[in-house]
Image 1 (cartoon, rainbow, N blue to C red):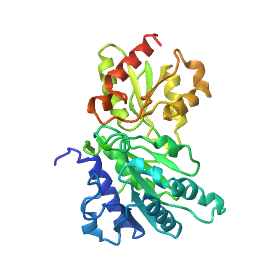
Image 2 (image 1 turned 120 degrees about the vertical axis):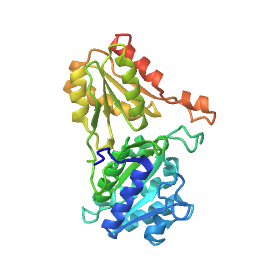
Image 3 (image 1 turned 180 degrees about the vertical axis):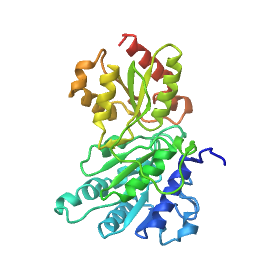
Length: 332
């Protein structure tokens, strides 16, 4: 018998999760621009319209505000919509429905109504899509009580966290880095879930904790392998969930290593790294620190179209190696 684990790409894992959810629950349906016959801007929905029909894989007009509003309203009336934005940047067009409606209805109606909507956001740079199609806006939505915000970094998590999101009674925002869609990894068959609100230690280490999100998890793991050749032992924490944040895992890691580097693609100022840093500063782990906390985030600029400039605006493996090396060797 072949014991080799089955591998799927990140996008295939998402598609499989959506298909499983739709097969298991007739209340689940998909909405979004060009997700039907075209298969989605990044081909993630694929042939699901042929399998489930246009009534459950619904192409929407070019209006993110309108589509998000329909999804929120549908969720409030008992269905479980999965709404795909073509690019995470277009969340800006639907903030009224996301922030003022989806996030607040359970509270404002005394818990009598829930909003079990899932919204998917292809995010991040690296595709040459320039300033209006390459942003990482997860911190915006992570600031809003009532929303759950996740960033799966592997195909396994992409499937399991999406299935957990569909089952969740509250609105869940999923940020999927566009460069991860083709990445392959082991993905079990059938239904399973990965808990929302729980970080994962991707690499054990003793000298420095890197808390990273999304594609930066993989860049941090690559940096950790390079640093291991220098005798520097890095622990890599995949945050996975922005809200609610797994503070306990972060604190435990920093207490072990006594150093913290936060790595994320979004603009450094007021980003996820600030919240991770504050978590340590306000906890017992602060007394364990042997060096200042360092944030390594995106540059203070819109994402350029030029591919070399685009790379220069977000952390790359050499940047992580340099920052980690300086922290461990006391140059920070």
